[in-house]
Picture 1 (tube, rainbow, N blue to C red):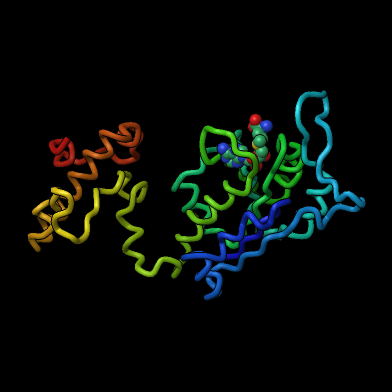
Picture 2 (picture 1 turned 180 degrees about the horizontal axis):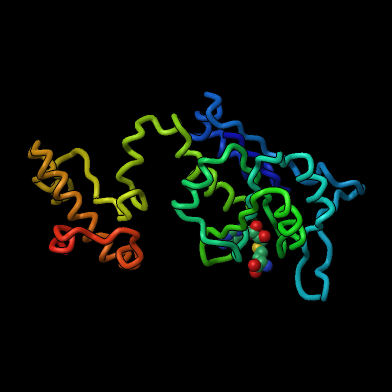
Length: 240
Ligand code: SAM
């Protein structure tokens, strides 16, 4: 998988040298490059923004500078990803969908965002996804790009050591939140690990985990049970 990030703050993306994504880059599983948008400016102040057409507060990122950058970075098989609070919500389903793509290019906005003609114009050439990581406003698209790269990158083959750990996760194929997890010590501050997890009875453990996942989802995210693609089985319904 190839990922390019275009930003006016390349240092923000330094975290991508760390942990699983950093290791995946070292092992050549993810090819990632971060580009400074100001490298495509042509004036001595390296200007990337201008006042909003129609007036109003703040500044807007210029389409001509973005055009220079994206003409160079975007390949014909790339997906252009534009973080914006006005975008579609970035969720596990979108992460899985994007993990199947060969080349992702993130265009990180700042100020009041990027001139709308950029997404519109590149939409005629490649797939463009304007995405939001939640209903709040950040100062820039870099953190949103980090979130998306982490969620997408860990789905690339070989990035997570044990692929089984991806199977039962929250928001995975089961459409549930994950059950609670425990490790040693068996007793800690008066609280014990549930006995069934120490029983060695794998069928019972599976049953307990399914019940916990269902109850947790019902308590914390009832919307996930309502919006399921597949209806719950009778056994699951009796658990609830
Ligand atoms: N004026 C814009 C609006 O109200 O929709 C907000 C601009 S915000 C201050 C600057 C940049 O931060 C955006 O262009 C986008 O790249 C990023 N951003 C802010 N909130 C975001 C969110 N929830 N999801 C993804 N990107 C976000």
